[in-house]
Amino acid sequence: MSVSLWVFLAVGLVVFFWAVGAYNRLVRLKNAIANAFGQIDVQLKRRYELIPNLVEVARRYLAHEAQTLEAVIAARNQARTAEQTAAVSPLSASALGSLTGAEQLLGGALGKLFAVVENYPELKADQNMRELSEELTSTENRVGFARQAYNDHVLEFNDAAAQFPALIIARLFGFQPQSMLASTTSEAERETLRIAM
Image (spheres, rainbow, N blue to C red):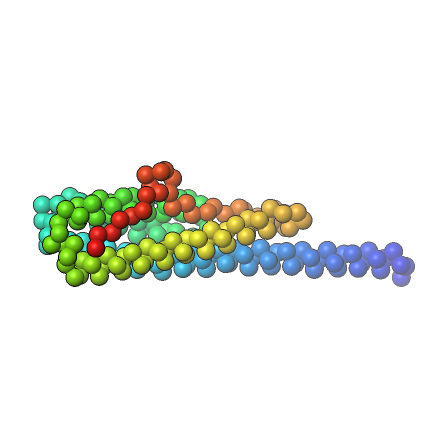
């Protein structure tokens, strides 16, 4: 065998192993995104379990505010449906968009509920309401941290898939850029959710 054939084979092997490594890295990063969404999913499910309990405690005091309570439950149900859809395909931009929209609607409904609760000192003083509010606040914080971790993984994946020469492998095998989770789209939504204590 000639020297040029050996050089050609060596270069071919280096390119092959580089391509395998780049592909495996993109797969690992994509799986990390799915895992990060799983962490969000766990926290959202916890939040969705707390909301009916919170509404039931409030219902005892807010009988004439049934419309507000029903809006919270309807928004919770819509968000839960969107979450279940997104959990099936956590890398789907449309599923994540629907989840973001439903979560914003739920946040608005909860904000209205807590604004109403502010007008009822006996409800604010209720032990169950305080405990549920604290648990919901804690869960909201965990959701925020999980979203940040998800977005960090998406950024890492998108950076890896967009950099040359890994870009070649990403395009060749159909690795598409992933969407980040946006928790807010307007200034009004950026306001902190106030939970009555």
